[in-house]
Image (tube, rainbow, N blue to C red; front, side):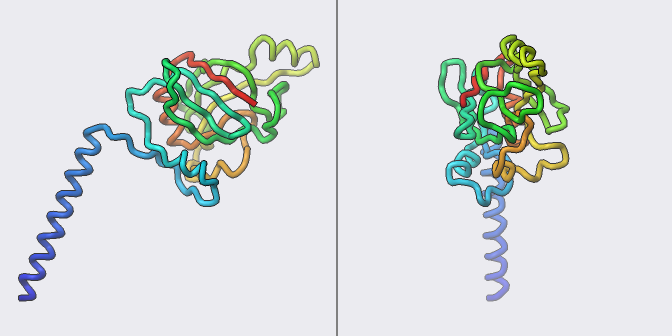
Length: 202
C-alpha cells in the first residue's frame, strides 16, 4: 500500500513538472512580455513599485518620444501615434531642481532635445545620448564665461553595480543624467528609435 502511494505521489509530481514546463515553453514562445529584472523594491513608494512591476514591452514596440517629468521622477515612453506605452521611474542629477546651465552643476537639463547617440559599452551598462547642450545652452554658458557641460545620458547602473537595481531610486545620484535599472535601459536601448524626441519637464 505504501509503495502504491509513493508511486502515485511521484507520478503526480512528474505530471506537475511536465505541465509547468509546457506552460513556460509556450509562454516564452508566444512572446508574452515578462517583467524586467529590477531587483529589491523594499522601501520604495507604492507608485514606484507598481511601475517597476510592469511587464516588458513587446519586442516589436517602437518608442518615438520620451517625456521626463522631473518633479515626479518619471519618464513616459510614447509611440509614433502619441500612445503611452510605459512609464519608468527614474533618478536624476544630484541637484535636480532647475535647468542645467553649467558643467558640474548636478542638474538634469530641461527642454526639448533628441536621442542622438547610443552606446552598448557604456560605463553605466548601456546608454542613450541626449542632445544637450543645444545652441542656446552653449550661448548662455559662454556669456557667463563657463562651459555648458554635456554627456547627458539615459543610462543604467555603473558597471559592476547592477545588483543595486531599483534601490538606486532612493536618491538622485547622477551628474545630470537620467538613470534607470539595467533591465530598463536594455529595453529602452532596443526600442527607442534613432533621433527620437525627448522632452524634459521641470
